[in-house]
Length: 234
Image (cartoon, rainbow, N blue to C red; front, side):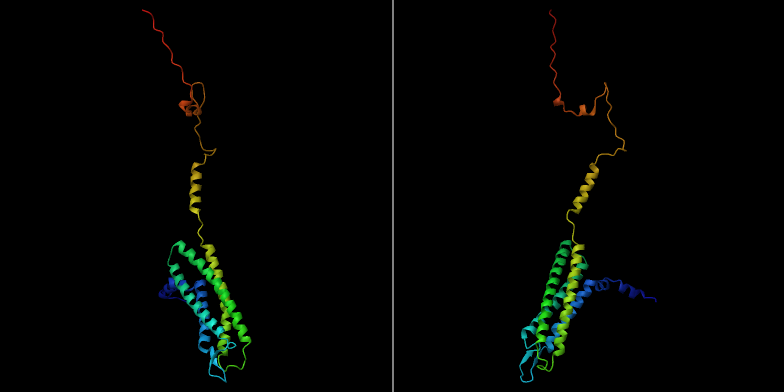
């Protein structure tokens, strides 16, 4: 099947290659999961009971559970958008110091969000387990969706932390590498010649001076006493 040149150029563009990266895909999925968590509880998470008109959280009438899920989902969604924009900036080029700091911060936040979603999933599941099945007429499906995607968020943030750790290991600059390379060049330059290379050795003999004796400082030689010349008497 022949692909038009314009579509091929579009597939090879920098934007498409950026969207095909595993880190970009995980950030988009994490943002979608967070959006589902806080939007489902924000819209249908607060319902009134059959005998009252006051709104309560469908998770065991615990408003803290709904507030925690909505707040965590919203912050995780904004965090994913922020790091997605920083990924785009990093792919265009940046200093090595910025990349290292960004990757370290990415790993720390991924581990932190993994712990938050783990605690949130356990908390929401516990509150749903203690909820009355006939307490609310609506909102049960929204609560189940929030709990399900809170669990999926744990997995996606674990994978995101793994990708951040791999990038941190692969892109960590090796200090003194250039200095070691330059030192190797200097040592190679100053290394003694091999046995195969011809070396002009000074010859020794009765009429020739050795290189060692010529290299001695003149101050180390013993000075000769001046000779006294005797003048004849007139």
